[in-house]
Length: 463
Image (cartoon, rainbow, N blue to C red; front, side, top):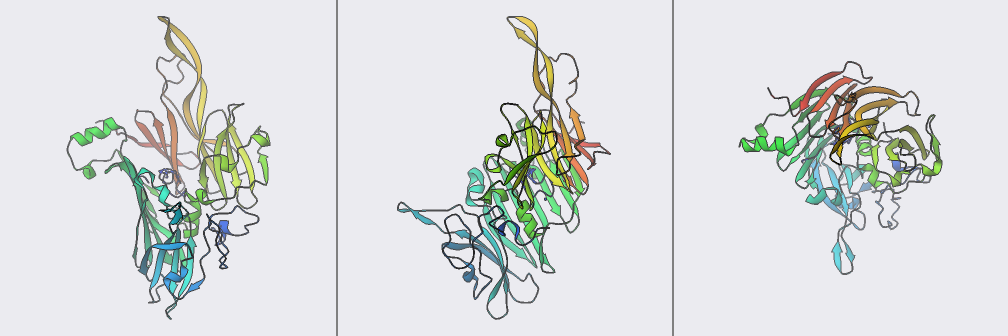
């Protein structure tokens, strides 16, 4: 598909579903992860900038000034791309550039390096020189972050005081993403984004955010082949095929470029030091310190300028846990445990939200030795959206969905796979309940779970 992450492709975690296409999908100082290197986790890109040779795998700090654009290019690096604009509106040409590590010799042949790429801005000083405005190592995908399609990088574009990054990747399912940053009053902010996900050129998920207007647009089509083939057989222009569900949502305040970089769902892959100073468990969580999975041992689901969130399971107990790792003090806190799987954690306005499976014992009719029998086994009968304070207190259920007829005494058919995908924006939640190959209902509600209303389903109901 043309993927968006976060809720997919993802994306930034200020809006969960956009960052889940994700996922994905969360003010930072200019130091961020790159300051106090002796106390905080190191990120590729913590070079000293003092002219000493950079160790392999590290990304250097660019000089503050240069007499020409190539003066910002460290030894062993090269300019991949650059675009001219006047972002500070002083009538002097400025530049946005992207640097990448140059090819190296490996046993007699030239090989690419997959170090983070450096996005940077250089402001013209009017005397033929330039001043470094910012550098960021999170916002540009590396060669290896495009999937089977290969290097996902596409050239920068610029207009007025804005520039846009572009990427495209995937395989049969493809994704595309465009993010626009605008300089206003000396501050760079993410002002618009467009992300697409689909099978080949057939789009199944479309997302556009316009922070100037404060509005986001979402469009969804079924990604089941049986549903897609119906549209293909009609021989229509695929772009004109009606979406199963379209809706708008209000956006929160735009992120600064620094925040966007820290909240980009791939930013965690640039971190090289995951030292844990201590492990704590919230009240009600029963887990020994040695069984708490460290960040570098887990799949990390959420990142922002303050912390990482992720879930893990413990083999002996069979329980699932939600953990937070804080950059500032390197403390790993296990905040919640559950009988069912924990998915899609994120932070919104001081609260941690996360989805869990509702697991119960279910009785099924089975055939054994030619006779009808009854078997009881543990199964997921529903999904639940929860929230709590960052210290693990105040846990509450925001939304719950149970598969229809889950309460019947003995079921004849297995319950299909269930999952809860959600996005939080503008003090509202959009929740999608994924139900195997059945229609997926979408619900809109307030962040506390009140005012729940079904807004449609994918695929749409037949008229």
